[in-house]
Image (cartoon, rainbow, N blue to C red; front, side, top):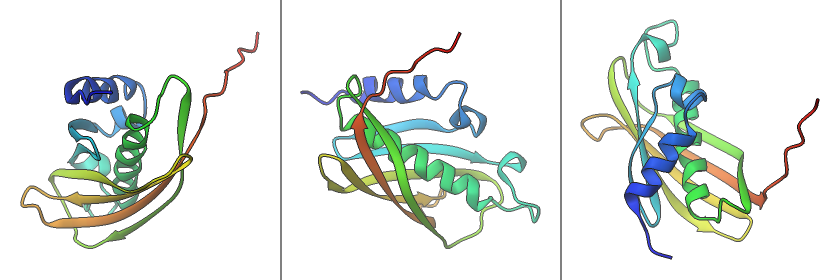
Length: 146
């Protein structure tokens, strides 16, 4: 299987439509065989009451990029990915601009992936350091209720 960066980025951005990722203006911007990167603007829509980047928005960015990264490592026709645990250390405040999250694989098992997600600012200063565990499982059929 050959790595196609543009196809991966297009797919990740496409499946984000009408989701939390679109609400937070998350955009997938770079990919490699063992990493995925996304950006999110920092403005009042992702602030907490003190006018700073909300930790929950940061974690949503981290889980989004880590889960999408897991998806790019599996056959998404037959498999689904679920985030099962995330931790975050918020190290620096951010009021405006853009944050970039890069997920890098730490462990790639058949059913469990472990990711380190570094969230940085425009100066490559570390804003948050996150760790995400995802579970790979067979794709479930969705039954439509009538």
